[in-house]
Image (cartoon, rainbow, N blue to C red; front, side, top):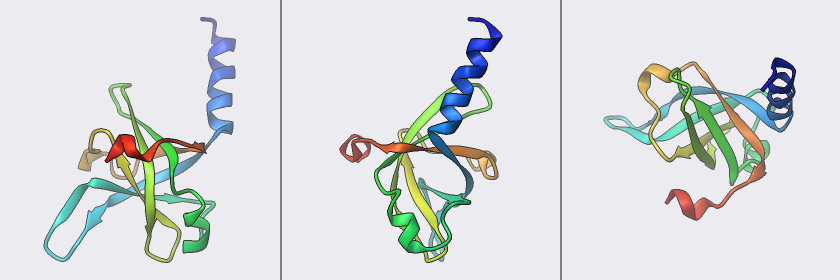
Length: 112
């Protein structure tokens, strides 16, 4: 594949997705829930906007190049953060890196 083709594919991927920052895992007072990753998107500023993305596909690329697929599970809080569930839990070292929320829905049953 030529470099022009790879650039075109990268542009298509970026146009069909929204970058989201992996902020943290879901937490309680004494417990961490690593199966839920909290993602913050720039386009979401409140809970109402975050509800629109429930059920959308999410992809996260590890530093090794492997892609982990997930789904937006539910809104988290009132500031536009969403909780996403991935096929494999994200590592704590990946906090602060980008995931991409796709602009299409996926099957939630696959991630239960």
